[in-house]
Amino acid sequence: MKLKICLMQALFWTSSLLLGSAFCSGQDQKKPEQTPDQQELAKRCKTKLLKEAPPAEPKDKEWGKDEKYRGAPTVSYTIQADGSVTNVRLKRKSGVRWIDEYALALVKSRKYEAMPGCLGIETAETITIDFQ
Image 1: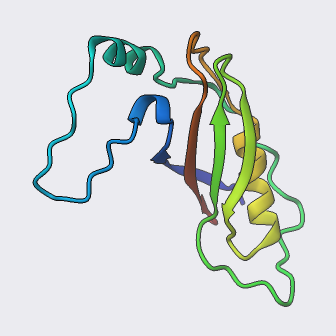
Image 2: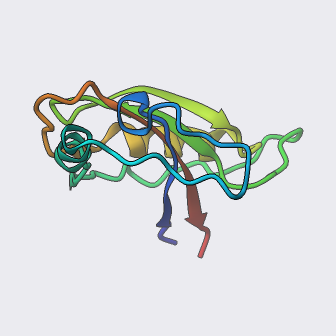
């Protein structure tokens, strides 16, 4: 049985450099205009996945007696200016240890295109695993 990984990209883009503090509470307020420098920075700091080496499928997929699947795990991480992935953390657990470990290993295996001049981009994503 092979695991298929389906990714729901970019739940959160929280780089204060790109977003600033433009969170508005009113529905009728408009987003502030970006300066040409901000537009150029946002364009230069877009992420592009170069490599993802999915980990080997776990051999032991047994669930612990107290484990119960509660949903797809969410992993948060930082994409550094050199394209490396750091600060990989489990933001929401699935309830099953081997699924959470697989999701963390998948994100750690990634390499993104370098983004010179960017401070790093913090993001999170939900990793959906197809058990077929």
